Structure formats: C-alpha cells, structure tokens
Image (cartoon, rainbow, N blue to C red; front, side):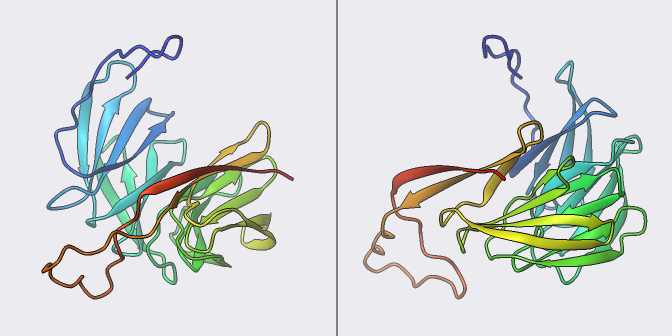
Length: 246
C-alpha cells in the first residue's frame, strides 16, 4: 500500500502464496483481490483496502486464473485460462459459487463487466466472447487477433478494446445492444502490445509494448526445447506506449 500524495509506502502486504499475477478492487465490499497462479490450485487472496489486512482466501477451479471484474454487488467474475471458464466468486461467502464454460473462447485473460446490460466481456486469442452475467450463457462471439492478454471497456462510448500482442493490433468493438456487437476498427499498434488500460473520462485506450532483439543462442549441450514452447525472449531494445483515440 502506498500514499498517492507522495508515493510513500504505507504497508507491505504478504499474501503468503506463490504465483501472484493480477490485482483488482471491488468497490462494493472495499476489498482488494490478488489473483494468483498458485499451487496446487489458483487462488484469490482478499485484502481489506483500508487496513491492508488479509480477510480471506478463495480457492479457484483452475491453475491459471487471470483477470477479474466485479458486478458491484459482491460478486467477482474471474477468467480461468487453463479451463476456458469463468469462476463466479461470492466475496461475502468467500467461495466460488459457479463455474461457467465459455467455449469457443480459448485461454481467457482480460475481462470487463457492463452493469447496464449485465454482460461480461472475456478477452481470448482469436475469438472473444460476451457472457450473460446471470446465466453464464455465451451470447456473442467476437473475432480478434492472436496473443490477447487484456481487455478494455469504455461504458460511456460503449466501446470494447481487445489488444492482440502477436498480431500487433487492437480490435475495437461497439456494443449495439446487450447481445449484438460490431467491429468498427482494427488499429495497428506494435507486436507485443497486449497490456491495455482505458481512460473512461478522456475516452482513450493506452497500450504498452516491448521491442526485443533476437533470442539468445541455446547453451551448448542443453536439451532441445519442449514441443510447443516459445523461444526465450531476446534483450529489450525499445519500448512503445501507444494511445488510441476516436
């Protein structure tokens, strides 16, 4: 925890578990959630936003939980990347109360919630989905680029931003109604640009990307890489910060 006025550290919070990967705030319960690729199962560690005290730990349904979004009434929706699913967490009960399959979404990461239409937006590589937050039904599919790791939502403009790091672009989608969506632009950014945030006041999307040099040569005598694994990333040679406006 740190003070916004001078950035001084107020407290260090030890979540006492491995694999910390994401963080979110739930205004309705005034709680912070650390979302973790922990072992033996993924977890959400719940922290009191005022005191910094840990108030609970929720065991999730998979090994690779990703982004979380609150419905504003004590429930949080968390993407489970390794199961192509969404866990519904009740923060008052401190447990998962439902798990929904969201096929054809593959490896869901970024997530947002729209209170006006009661819809969840789940960012997935190739095909993202819109989910009814009451029933778990996938009500719309959105074609987008590969290498998605975030999703942004502008509730005033009714625009969704889906960044694809491998393809180096953002798919911009307009919500026409609760269950109808139109792609209005594919904006070139930079390869690796998969982390995104939206400013809902200025109506801008911001993307950060790293530019890397060639992968390092393998150490002589080392075993070959496992099938399907990605090559090691080369040294960082540049950084990009891209603003998308309309």
